[in-house]
Amino acid sequence: MTGPLEMFETRAGEQRLENDPALMPPDGGIVFIGRIASPWTTRETCPKNMRTARETGQPAVLTIDAPYRSGLQGLERASHIIILSWLHHAPRSLIVQKPRHAAEAKGVFGLRSPARPNPVGLHVARLVGLDIGTGRIDLDAIDVLDGTPVIDIKPYFASTDAFAEATIEGRDEPNRIRR
Image 1 (cartoon, rainbow, N blue to C red):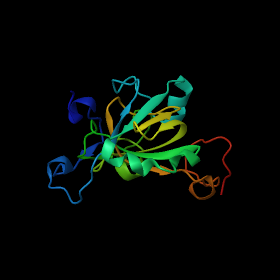
Image 2 (cartoon, rainbow, N blue to C red):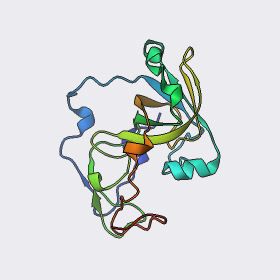
Image 3 (spheres, rainbow, N blue to C red):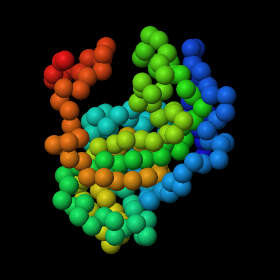
Image 4 (cartoon, helix red, strand yellow):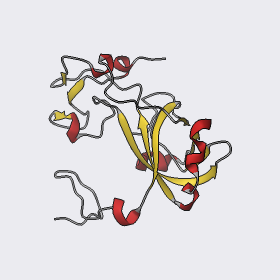
């Protein structure tokens, strides 16, 4: 398996933390509740976001480990779910990044990059199928590498989770209401 730093090259203007969070004692007891099976095996082939993942037409499967499967009861009511994943290949010490497409470097908290002190991924996927007995959740798409651990799953509520007026200055997002 390729290590975190090998997958992410260093670019001009980037900064790393003095102490790598991956080497520090944990603050909390996060457990992985399952894993994602995706068609993506390399960073180069993995879609950069869920929109791009959906455009490939490649589905994915999330499998919840046996002790956590009863927690899936009632999830079948949701058309879409929020998945929190642990982006285990990402470096954790990169605090200022220079994306390929950006003119200037930006702080990690102003980006959606997987490289961050706590590499938590957030994905909203369409729930295609659910088998509580086997812990199998079929998804329309996913933008993570095969084998990515899952931290949590939540139902997506369009009434409270979506903000049509949300914008990012300097980012062209068609069909968005501007402030």
